[in-house]
Image (cartoon, rainbow, N blue to C red):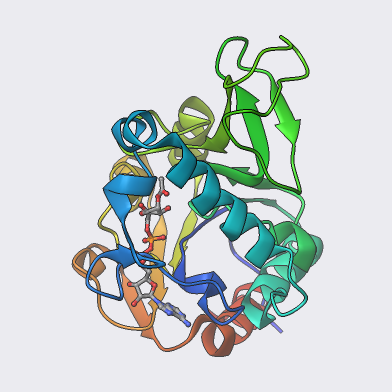
Length: 241
Ligand code: OAD
């Protein structure tokens, strides 16, 4: 059997990898996210206009994520297996705010758009774990004030997390795989080009359908992530890509 030829693998994931786990994607239903305009519930302006709506929205998402129906699917599990069996360095950069990669067994995960199970104090930027609900009357543990807590989510117009680290990872990558993302949101939509800038990086997209950035990839695999990713991981590990 051939050996895996890669040393630095970067995997980018989006909402499509969690779709088979029962979490709705963002842009499949006329731009509505769980019946809301994305800008209403995922922008600083939306939060200023109607904080209770935004608190309620993320409280519901958190409850859904923790319900027993939502579990990691074979795509999450296959990526955890890759991390375990691959001899080089592998990082998952996810745009998803769920914790399904971690629950699937992955350890090296960067949540560039934040995490649903965390909240943050707007005064001190201190981050707390949260599995329940918050609202504008919730009192922050660090400053003892009402109304300073917010979801630890990167909203439109805000800077994604870990960007310096991500740029370095992409510079080093010799395999870049993008799974279940529409490629419509900057800067993640540019990662494939950044990966190819300095290296002879192999680039693969796995998605239900072609995206507006498919043309940037060496190869596009079409289908459900849960069907495609386990086989793709087998091929990477066997050096058969
Ligand atoms: P999108 O909803 O824009 O795209 C999801 C992609 O997954 C689409 O291209 C679908 O065709 C594909 N898809 C759906 N089901 C799939 C399956 N079972 N297997 C494989 N692919 C499937 O979601 P993202 O690209 O993740 O940001 O959106 C990026 C960001 O936009 C999100 O992180 C979020 C949103 O605004 C914030 O909340 C900050």
